Amino acid sequence: MRISPSLSQGLQTANLLATLLVISIHYTSKFANGVPVFLDANFYFQEFFTNNIARVAVPFFALSAGFFLFSGYQGPVSYRQILQKRRRTLLLPYVLASALIYTVIMLKTVVGGGLIDADPLLHLYNILVQPRAGQFWFLRDLILLVVLSPLVFYTVQKSKGLILAPLLVLWLLEIQLLPIAGKWYVLNTETVFFFSLGCYFALHPELPESFTGIRPAATWVLLVTWLGLSALRVYIDPVFSAWYRYDYTTLSLMIYKFSILIGIPALLAVSFGKRPAHPRVLFLSGFTFFAYMFHTEPLQDVLLRITAHLVSPAYAFYLTFPLATIAVFAGAWLCQQYMRPLYMLLTGNRGTDRVMDRLHVGR
Image (cartoon, rainbow, N blue to C red):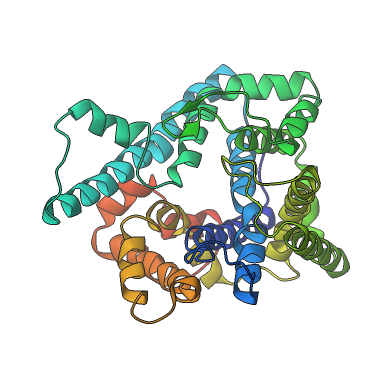
């Protein structure tokens, strides 16, 4: 299946927005002073933005990954090609980036006078199974789903998409079927559902293509509904948490989940817009994979130390989030400019020039 330039550019823009949302999640400071007795405006805003609006990011990533992987999928021959390609574009970056982050953390421990365990198997485990940067759980899920991609494809295809119904129910009810390995589920239900949904969209490309011509009125309806559901969830359950915890009610969980189901098409509608994406936006989108991997450790510790002298811990978000965004994208640009071989290894050949050429956009 050939993906139209308009669809490809829209998805690339949505990918940039989703990356910014992920960064915001990891820099929230609403609990810096514990849960306040009086939930102030700062707490409510951060809860609304980082724990509801931003939660569409990972489901979108999984949906997009499934869509691109299964576009043009043709059975065993495609599977061998996919394994070869994803070994270079996913597995190798996962291992190298995890090892680099882990090495920096270990060096910081030694410099600080700490001790390091001498067991090499433990270090290997901390690189491959339980990376120190928490966002790597999603990359680990994707690696496993790539290996299982023939099963996903034929299940979705042969069931004509009906397999999505039980997967949707599992996700809506926050039911995890697989055990935890290295702090994270072997495969998260959320990743499996949206990756499979991406497969369904690849089999029915007219569905995602329909967003390329979405009308402004429809965009506004999606946006208002998304924001309204998010605000309602925060209002009825301001200390909601469904990430390896069960701090929610059935009502707040359902509102949260449906806000994500509305939020993804809203994100896409905003990304497609009325005019083609600006070349600079598409250029920045070429750095998103690097930004996803390196926006927390060890950058987060540095920024928190700096902002601790400038602002109250509960308000650190308003400095650390923009600073982290600027720093990680600037770091990506500098690495690509002056250490290009390393950058291409770490990102699986996701250079901005390749992105711009693929999208048929001039810089």
